[in-house]
Amino acid sequence: MSGVELKSVRKNYGAVEVIKGVDLTVRDREFVVFVGPSGCGKSTLLRMIAGLEEITVGDLLIDGARMNDVSPDARGLAMVFQSYALYPHMTVAGNMGFALMLAGVPKAERDLKVRQAAKILQLEALLDRKPGQLSGGQRQRVAIGRAIVREPKVFLFDEPLSNLDAALRVQMRVELAKLHRDLNATMIYVTHDQVEAMTMADRILVLRAGIVEQVGSPLDLYNKPANTFVAGFIGSPKMNLVGASVSRRDGQTFAFLDGGQRLPIGDVSLKDGAGITLGLRPEALLLSAGGAARGEVSVIEHLGGETLVYVDIGKGQLLTIKTGDQQPARVGDIVPISFDPSRLHLFGPDGQALN
Amino acid sequence: MVKNKRALVIRTVLGWLIAFIMAFPVFWMTLAAFKTEMDAYASPPLLVFTPTLENFAEMNQRVDYVRHAWNSVLVALGSTFLGILIAAPAAYVMAFHPTKRTRSIMLWMLSTKFMPAVGVLVPMYLMLVWLDLLDTRTALITITLLSNLPLVVWMLYSYFKEVPAEILEAGRMDGAGPLKQLRYLLVPLATPGISSTALLCIILSWNESFWCINVTAVDSGTLALAIASFSNPEGYFWAKLSAASLASVAPILIFGWVTQRQLVRGLTFGAVK
Image 1 (cartoon, helix red, strand yellow):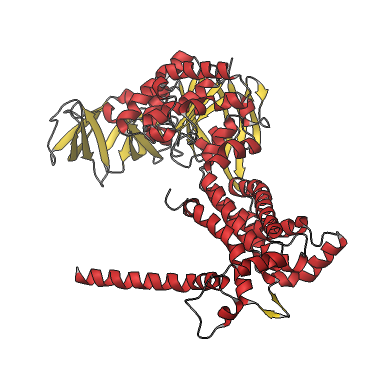
Image 2: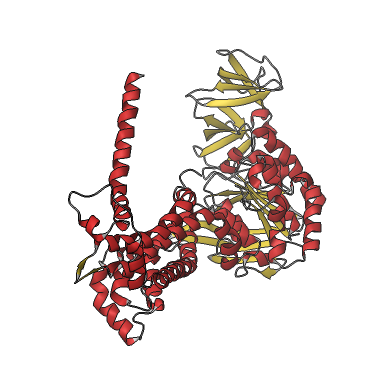
């Protein structure tokens, strides 16, 4: 059992509050990703769990024991840093065995553990090299190896892939997911990249300005975003968010788009004229006749397997439409747009989800 | 091309000229050390003369060179070693755990160098009298150490700042407390900087003369005191003074020459990393 529990955790730097009360339970063997834009406090939150930042208010429990005042090394955690933070003057083996050396583990046992970890990460041939002689991906592996050797209760990752190039990042993402399965370990992972979050997490915590916006499985967040922020942050390309106001006529409820068009929506408990936001994923929109709205195609992006069509529906409001068709329209065409009503997201004036 | 060549010639000549002006006193001192007193006073000055070693022999008769040299070595090494021992933890804390007062403390430390040493001569002298430390190496090491300390802390601070904080944080996660971070991470990583600080400190201590002349005498005087004793009320003895100066400058000059690579590497450590 290696669970992590945060209870109303807050962090202040002087008068500035950067973490504004976070409650979270990370279960044993769970892979939880903290995601959010830069400056949202996700790294600070991770560093608070690691013990590198003090917790101003609230409790941190690891395996049920309060850890607020326990030193970082005694918390049973291992951390992989964004810059890898390898010890440049030590060999790969020295880096990986450093914690064990400090803990007084005999050399023979230390070497054995380092070799085992090196085997998992395919670093055996590099054990005598210094970090300066390694490529970015190899350094990243050493940083992970250093964490594995300690056999921690919980692994902490602080944007570990952001210094790698795109191809290597995808490869390491897959390797990390595999590592999580092989080691059966609890992992907490910080990233600003929602693709990493979606692909690796069991659960995602979306953070904005020190406040938890939503916690849930990747598909929960994708299918049922709690508010416009999560709706816009999760999913690529971004969800289309269109401002509108509620209007009822002949017993039916409509949304009047800011661009002047009218769409029927299901009943909502809001007064006529109330401002709402419609959310539609690019893949939920179709270019088909009999559509509820029309617009002019302003840009087309061909990605090969899919095509992104940007349609102006008035007042410069662009809708992104994703289609599998390679030639769905031409720039300048007026196209009808339709959507599956069950995939329409409605957000109230406060930005919170209505349905 | 021609223009470039002329610029090169001008630069070279200028460079040699400046080097000559800077090295001239040492050169002249070296010449004088091998002249007789008469030759040393000759006007116009002699460039060609019969060299003699009698100045060195006389100097050794008058002052105990070996003892003074030994004192110089002890004071230079002692104050440097202790200075770095004290400054390293201070610089570590200031570089990696600064508070809002760190900046002002550092400026205050540096400001102690603004005051001329003679300003505190009387109180220092009286304190040494009370502590019964006049003419002791302990006193000289302590004073030299304290007067170099601000510089040592500043230099180590700037070298430590070059070490990424995340490396020390990784060390903390691995179980290294402040002392182990210093020993296993910071000191090995800042070795070039620490060595050049030490070298500079040794040179400064070696050449320190004010306190040496004022608070030491026969027992603990360094080479600076030995030189000073050749300018006395009986008159100046150029040749002997030069011989004494040469004998005391030579060790540190050779030391500086041997270590200059290390010195330059350390002083430009951050810039060309």
